Image 1 (tube, rainbow, N blue to C red):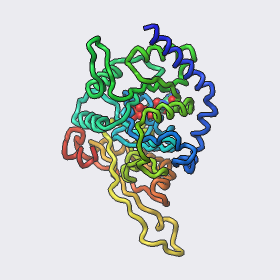
Image 2: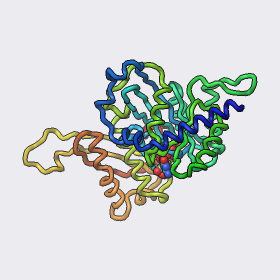
Image 3: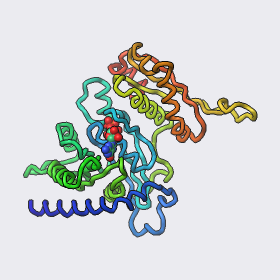
Image 4: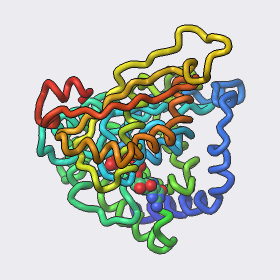
Amino acid sequence: MQERFDLLVEEQSRVMSSITNREESSMELQQPDLSSHLPNQEHTERPYRSGFVAVVGRPNVGKSTLMNALIGRQVAIASSRPETTRKAIRGILTTPQAQIVLVDTPGIHKPKTLLGQRLNDVVQDSLSQVDAIAFLLPADQEIGPGDRRILSRLRQDFARKQEDGSWVWKLPLIAIVTKIDELNQKALMAKLVEVSTFADFSQIVPVSALERDNLAEVQQVLVDAMPEGPQMYPAEQISEEKPEDLIAELVRGAFLEELDDELPHSLAVVVDDIERPAAPADGEGEGSEKTLVRVSIYVERDSQKPIIIGHGAEHLVRVKKKLRTRVNQILGTKAKLDLHVKVAKNWQGDPKQLQRLGF
Ligand SMILES: Nc1nc2c(ncn2[C@@H]2O[C@H](COP(=O)(O)OP(=O)(O)OP(=O)(O)O)[C@@H](O)[C@H]2O)c(=O)[nH]1
């Protein structure tokens, strides 16, 4: 026990000193230079590593924000509404030493509807072939039943109970303590001790994705947890998602932000079609040269349509404006969103509708 405590203190002082040096380490990440992300001579003495990391945690712990901060561009959506992340969107992090595919999972919760069950199945799929697990715990909240449920689920799949009651993990289980900007140093120390008694984590790393604090340390811990392996994707690729899916997630996220609490959770978004202009025609207006992205937004009841559209279509206008640059980036060209609000009755409980809507 004493040995374990000493190790913990040692780990904490290492972590605290890396936080104190945070400016240098986070600067490196803020200005990604893709040319330096390719495997090169300097790093040949250490074998290249690659693998998959499942990012798990209860809703709203900051999974999407952390993934986006690590990768440097928006991949999954971050929203102040819980359960925004619905699909196992992957982000790909390429460094000179390693390539890590981050599997973002929806918050694991008790399924109440068929949709909830499907979401849990997505989590299960995401977990089935990973090399390490990053278990996110928010610094500003107590460890609670939601965290315990996730832990017991992870143990079922990835750990073995020994005779003395302790667990042996088949792969690295890394605790990432998020939102540390919410705590002072003393409270953070206490939090790290609490986390260390919660489970047999192979590492505990504190981070604030919002303030880009200790991101380099998180990256290094994840790299070290990867097995030796080749680079699997081109360095400039940040996601395995199709543009249609990325845009659908962005549109959904933007509406959830826009509508705040006015909207029930029953909102699904599908990109029906991406129509590229036939050929650039000289002398024509800018509009005719844009790629047209047709998007359907599904609600469950007629009465919900006006909530989405807003007075004088104000919500549609604002969402289009907000996403313009990001949609252009994803498609690599100027694009125009064409948003249609439609009704799909009780889609959350209907298997056929769920499939059609991509769940
Ligand atoms: N103070 C603080 N807030 C954060 C930090 N990271 C994320 N948040 C906030 O926490 C909320 C949830 O963040 P998300 O990244 O959407 O969380 P998530 O775990 O992906 O959420 P789900 O999609 O519900 O699973 C948002 O309001 C974020 O701005 C952080 O480092 N510090």
